[in-house]
Image (tube, rainbow, N blue to C red):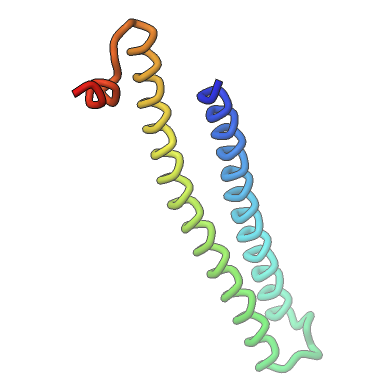
Length: 115
């Protein structure tokens, strides 16, 4: 029963990690799109009331935000990948223990306790 609950929690956690990564990627794409539109409007003088310093500052803010989001996305992918790997290893160990119990074998942990 505990293993089933653990598997349910793992499924929920993996979905949340996936959603977070997708959200960050969407934010990166939106900022890059906004930056591209802004640069295009600057070139076509759609922002005629902004000074050169203003347009440079706006471009800089969007660039930094895009860099920050890309960095967060990369960190999330790396962290979540390592967590998912650890969880898969843990579940594999749990399945081995259950298989030993089902086949009448003792687990390595219980053998250590007997000695």
